Length: 520
Image (cartoon, rainbow, N blue to C red):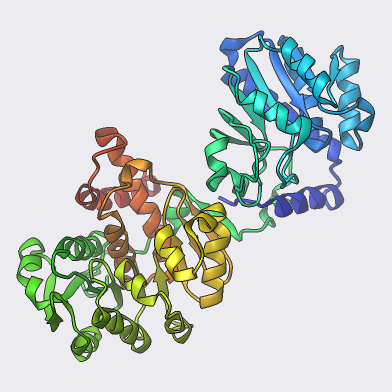
């Protein structure tokens, strides 16, 4: 599903008006009617209200006038407060203001703090509030009466419906530079906006419903696909083929390089996830001292001992590792590998020399921190990095706070600069491609925040790479399947107590659930 920035949505509106000949007032009418219909349907138990609609002076406020008119027609008791003088409106908002008043509606003007306080005091008994204050073009911190109105909304017991996006949330990034509306429901237009799906903005949006505003199909089809939400339909289209006459060689051989003394579990989970992803064969290369432990847990996985120093892989294992790479289709490395100097040096040298697609996580990422020239030397070779925000901070030299403030920008900038596929893990995991395209994950939940989940994801992406998938597609699909397996288990585990090993057994079932929707 396409997800648009403010700029992309403005371009879509412009083309609809200029090329399809649909006036802006018609788009505004369709948008407002879509919100009014959704409100009437979703909050029918609150009829006749009263319902308070707070309008700004721009097009979002114009939408608010349309909503008010349609709700009045449907029998709602509507109170509308405009945070400006009525004469301050312009463009299509003026048309909608006049139509609202001609239909019998009243406008309470509140351009200053005193009149706003009076208007809001009169609306204290409202059972539903609608935020039509700021539109997609508003990207700064709200001030003055706007900030006061938002703060008032956030202290009401009545549910709040946001029009297009919650006021105070940056539509293009999800950044919240100041105060923002906490909505129970956001009704957005034509396509979801980036700010509704990316944290912290997603936290303010509540449930998100997208309504049509009459943009012609051919214009919508031309909208930018630089950012996509990976949902079931998008994930299904990425699934690699499984020919009926295939055999284990057909589906690839994954080499996993992982584990150290005390961290054998990370290696075991990564290797098993490779098989659960559908790879035909998996070989785990690990320190010699833990080979027997790994082999006892992985009866379907081949294991190979590597020379070790103090429980971690030694740089002397380089030749053996390169020999093991022969005949493999992909490599997953890093989980539980340890942070010794020799292990880090081995990771860096191996990444420089191998031509195979590689997914790097955990201690593999730590080995790259301060050595990003390794990635530059791999440019043109499939490389997937899967950092959590702390690892991303070490890689990029930025703070976790800076990264989390605009996750899409952080991931995209790094991916483009270093020619890698960057999976920035967390709520709404971001997958960024070297060409600047971004995928926002639509699956998963907070109950998956437990040890080992990243190891499973690493093996899952590695297993998909071994099946011949493009690095970006393997990463996006792997992230979605990982979250989908967690979503399927949520009814059993809720938001706590879900283990990474529980997820392993659910992965092939999650994949099959996508296939069933094709064949049914």
